[in-house]
Amino acid sequence: MLGLNAGERASEMKLRLADGSTCGGVEAWVILCRSVWWLWPFGVMISLPVLNWIAKEVYRWIARNRYCIGGRCRLPEGLARTESGSVIRSNSDSNKGLSIARQAFRVAAIPRTRVSRVADWLPLILLPLVVVFLRTAMEPWVAMWVLAFSIYGGCKWLTYRDTPVEGLNLPLRTRIIYLLLWPGMSLKEFAGTPPANVRMNVTARWFAALTKTMIGIGLVWFAVPIIPGDAWLLCGWVGMIGLIMMLHFGTFHLLALTLQSFGFNARPNMRAPLLARSLADFWGRRWNTAFNVLADRYGFRPLTPRIGARGALAVVFLASGVIHELVITLPAGGGYGLPTLYFALQAAGLFTERHPLIRRRPWLNRLFTSFVLLVPLGCLFPTVFVHNIILPMLHALGAI
Image (cartoon, rainbow, N blue to C red; front, side):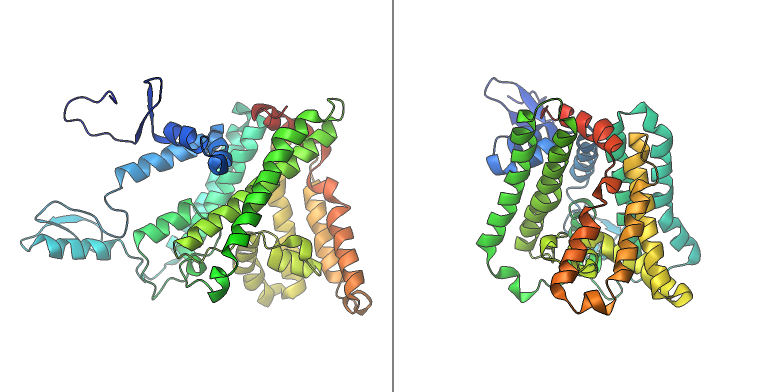
């Protein structure tokens, strides 16, 4: 029924549709997810060109290594795996071989050399450079996503390699899930014990995550189509807010709750930013906390002894501006310098809000925070970005 030859084993999951046709792998997942209302956003995401290619590569890798997931490999009898990873012939029973294999797939406390530390940074340097040179061969909005994922992948690998894992006994499953499924940037936190309050108000958390996802879907596929065509700037901003709500606030929150149900310490990256009491509270504890881990570990802490806390903070925000230039203005082909200006204003606002006149008045601090965050928002997402990136992407998604 699935079109396999006699004795052939499927290399991927197969799905047989009602009309008799078959599909497999990621294409089957797209159809299955889009057939379930609460998985429908995930099905749309993995059907996008860039995400679809990444999903296929991840699926093929997992399919090839599915007998090794969980911290052990089912090696043939008489074979064992050394701690260096090579397979050797063993005269002992297979149980001993499996024990050696289990040890080979644990995170070991291996001394890090200067050369290995430099090599860990290479993906973060080389991947974006390759995409920058090849971006003209892609649609601008596709180039934006590929650039974002190349930077994200480089940062993810860096945190994976540079996390202080000495003393941790992490199975392969935990590391794969951290690398491929969790957008956070701390393996040590992810593998730790969840806090006691993670089991509280579970129903309310799921309802909130689903609500945010549905609001994002409503903005993209229901609100955008009814906006007049000549109001393209409004259309772009509504669609962009909808995508951010659906992905960063909704889907990632659902993912965190799912991983928490399996015992992982997956805390949402967006932690009620509207409740921020100050700019320091917004950028330090509530907005995209995954980047906060990167900024603290690789920017603020190493630079503070050299140039002081204020200087380190300024460098971190300027670096954030440069990263957003790569992802926003470079694919859009305009608006250069505006995202960097936005983050420079945020750094200046952080220094200003420490003045006693603002710091001692909570209402004024909240008002000042809203002003600094929202008024220059057009610098972070300039008009050329909305016109050249967001609108074509919404058209590709079928929203306009």
